[in-house]
Amino acid sequence: MSTELIELSNALARETDRAAASLVAIHTEARGSSSGVVWRTGIIVTAEHALRRDEEIHVTLPDGRVVPATLAGRDASTDLAVLKCAEAVSPLTEISDSSAIKPGSLVLAVGRTRASGPVAALGAVSLVASERRTWIGAALSPYIRLDVGLQPTAVGGAVIDAYGRAIGIATPRFARFGAIAIPASTVDRVVDALLQKGHIPHGYLGVGLHPIRLPDALRQTLQRNEKTAAIVVEVEPDGPAQKAGIMIGDLLISFGSQAITRVEDVHAQLSAEAIGKSIKTKYVRGGAAQETNIVVGERARGGK
Image (cartoon, rainbow, N blue to C red; front, side, top):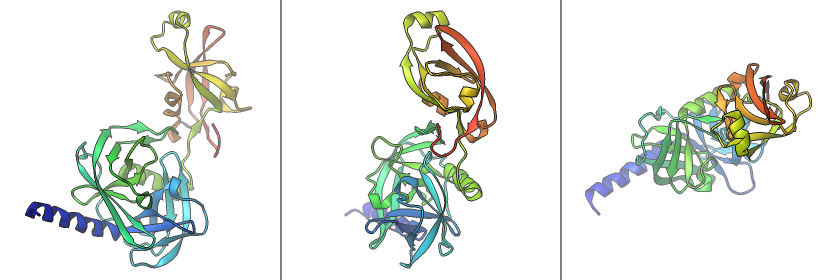
């Protein structure tokens, strides 16, 4: 084996050990586990979808001790959950702002198993987008897709760059294949909100929407280039949309300054900052364009 390969192998092993000192195994089932990162002293971050329950959570610390942890909050829109654990006292010391990450950059996905200790997978960044919305509407900025074989036990672990810095949390949740790194900036924002409120506020309109192709004649009437819009298939009684006069069968064609071509165009504007704001909405009813203002509400869990 060449000297260069030996040096690379040793460097990867060192970075795995260094990251593993801030990783825990999370077990909420009789068998199996996922990973978590000690993001701050006493605070563990993991992948929300891998956290199977809200109570009776235990974690295996780097020194092998099994201790209880309590759920501070979870947010499915970013696939992040935050746990409190007084014994988790070795947070990551180097966190990247992700600004230097480029496609082709080497990364390590590092986790911890319940019984066997650290696990690691070497891969590369396959895509970096300045921002991408999850299908629930949360913004990941940047969106970092990984070409890495992510083991189930490493889900919720740390993604480490070539400098040994954590660029985010590993999850397969928002990737059609491979995995992504939920960026550190998003993790910090979600941790702050969950510790303060226990949940992430999201705006909602109280409607069910479905994409629809606009007839050519209607597009000509509206002088609209976009071929698709969103049809209202459900209206919540006494919800923000109903209060603004929206009815089942209306075609939403713009929301605020954004033309609606798909349902995600609406979801993308329902951030916490939008709650309480009056948003001009254009829609079509009976072939005629109309306007109304919808005051964005705060979505309850399970709301639309």
